[in-house]
Image 1 (spheres, rainbow, N blue to C red):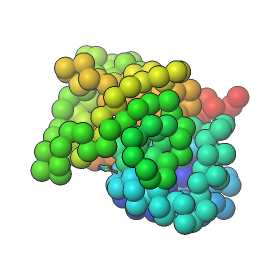
Image 2: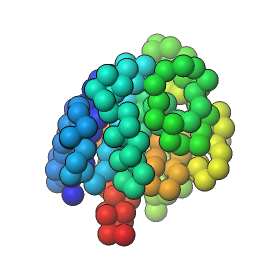
Image 3: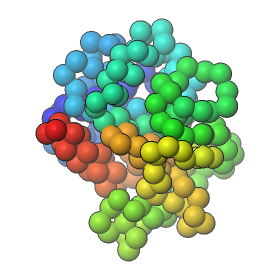
Image 4: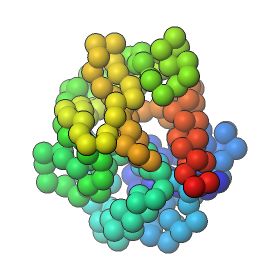
Length: 195
Ligand code: GLN
């Protein structure tokens, strides 16, 4: 299994470290040709305006959209913004997931926080909450069409969604030692590659 991590800006090294620990081969994606032999792709957190502009100038916008048609993609924080259909502002996005997202909606860098979240797609997700790190996180304002909530804050606010083979989390699972989100994504990749 080859997993790509979009490596234009942001926290891509941390994802690569976790995937490597899980025994998965990774490829840093900076150009369209790097998508060729991948089974799935992670779009890391960082700054969505920068990631969008760099993807645009690297000729990656169409190749990324085409890749996502039949391969699992997981967007983390800025990656969630980059995958959303509606972010209420004008910056390059892939326009994939049927979600309305508000950038920086939990406040500034100094308002970053860690919270237990309940994850419905983990077998032990309710008994064993996931410690989620939120850094200038986007808020999920609306979840439409086939998109489904898979994780919530204790107050019931949605913070992760899934739509078919795509997933988006408004927090950073690569910054904690709990690998369940990475394992869950790898499962999706494995199932999709067998179809
Ligand atoms: N605030 C950033 C943005 O709007 C996202 C922050 C993050 O990825 N941690 O792109």
